[in-house]
Image 1 (tube, rainbow, N blue to C red):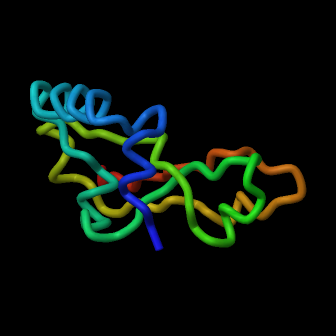
Image 2: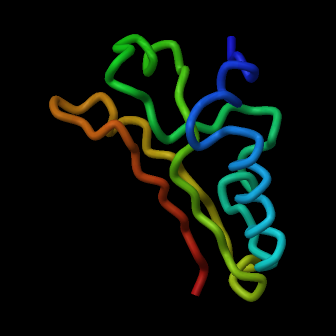
Length: 104
């Protein structure tokens, strides 16, 4: 199970970093594309470290990759996918792609 207390002590997820990121999101009136499609109550990771080989299998990762949309672009958002299959490739990156579908 996800341990929020451990994550908030991790680089990229400390309370100060999280507040700063949220401040930029709100100040720019951006839409968090990923969270538009995945509720806050669900895990949303795009990075699994190599130091702990079982982290991907246990789905213990971090959300390090973001997609934001401007106010004018937000209504055209169709879908979002975190392409986790790429993490199982022979020589994968520790990050996986975040793909956003936008209507013309």
